[in-house]
Length: 477
Image 1 (cartoon, rainbow, N blue to C red):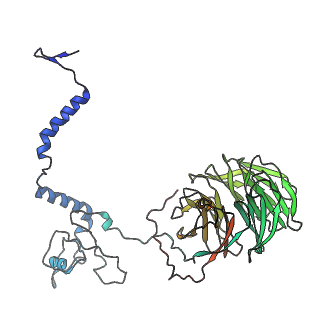
Image 2 (cartoon, rainbow, N blue to C red; image 1 turned 45 degrees about the vertical axis):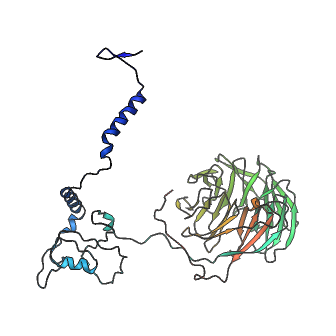
């Protein structure tokens, strides 16, 4: 319906959008000619603005006492209203010509040593990059050296041997306490024992009906423990080379296992979201550590509380009181699955690996220390650290990165090479471990091979210098 104006003529109704566009066009026609014209600068307002900034920033150091000021002439000492700024010869001449209220900017200079010659120790020294119109309190702040620890130099690692023999993905590894052999578990359902020095096959154990996900060798008995996707946990007697015990109780696949270092207890974690505690000798199910909401995929034990630490696909890490069977602490720092953890052999700390970050925690309270300074940006399946403080992490894309434990600096990045005949997508590392000396690193991969690594003895700090930049901000989470 048409509206009637005051003059009696009908007015067509218009939408709000059309009226807004018409108003916008009128405003543009009105102001467009002067749009590019700027107001002429007002010298008086600029002077007042600069004067206010100078008084606000430097009022406390503007007028110094006579004995701290610059002497303008021989025998004549007068308080100067100019700030004492180091500069070029021209600025010194301008300063010597008489008192001035202007601040003379100096070129940006590096901090000098304490014994270097320069202005009097009571003189305020400013370095103002750029024009004198902009002032900042950062010019007065003392530049402190970074408190981040400097990384130690470590020799780069190189591949020196490739062992093939498994018929499926190699999923797990464990070393003999005597450092003479190591064993690997595979998706071909076998456990193979290899000579560490020569890399030759010594023995093949069969008995699992699914892939072998976890292995551990006892330090006090001649026992080897294995766990797999077939829900079975087996104890092998290496004197007879056969299974002597089986531990039944898991409701789904078992993904990880660990032996307690001081008591005869076995810990296993799996897809049923429970870490189960077993008595090695009696096969008894001692307790079930429940609390995780998803698969328990990493576990390790230590002699003192917290004696058990587990990582899960629910992104949490739990520290357990083994006697009470309850959680002591839950760490929720990660945003992705915690697939791997590594306990430092000497320090009271451990690291955990996730697709988002590698984080370091202290023990026994589980306090967060810091993140590693780079991101591998892949799913991390395994990690290990030796006594020299070299942390190795391995990912789904075949990348293996080496880190300095103390500083979190990534000093080497390696990419595994698949064996001939394998797909490029099989460049994946599932497990890795140092031998007991910490001088050899063994990786288990998806191309059915086992690769052995050692330090490059010909490398020096001169041939492989550390390229380290300390972080500007230290994240607290």
